[in-house]
Length: 81
Image: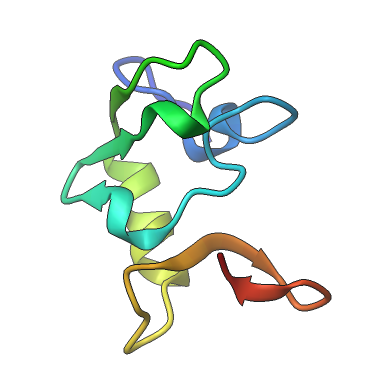
């Protein structure tokens, strides 16, 4: 996925990146509001999401998902925080 104006989801995932531990309640339309507790710097951040990233997230979110459900949960560890 490539986007010139905002990071794609793939650019936000990895060691020390905000998507680790991120939940659906942090996604607000076209922004990802990452709390300070999830940021290495300890400072909250709002990340604009590209149209492609929003479409990807919309297509992967299960129907009826609670806001505290992890965006990238695992079957081994469960899907909630």
